[in-house]
Amino acid sequence: MEAPHSALCVEEAEDTVKELRAALAEAGITLPSLGLDPVSLAREAPCPLVELGRCSVGTARRLAAVLR
Image (cartoon, rainbow, N blue to C red; front, side, top):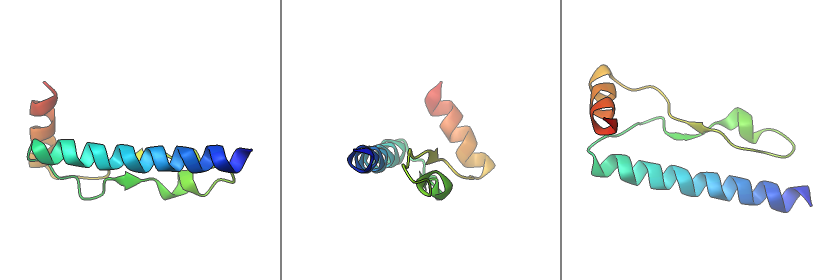
């Protein structure tokens, strides 16, 4: 039973990353390293974490402005 649950978790995480990438793009923000954390996928029953990654100071400022 663990495998189907894990597959759904990974699928949901992938969909969420796509949704976040699209929302950020609409705001003119690109996070090049945005994706799923590979370490969290390596578990026997993966429960993925979203890796936001690194960005420039300018991108961080735009992101902060959008979140305000």
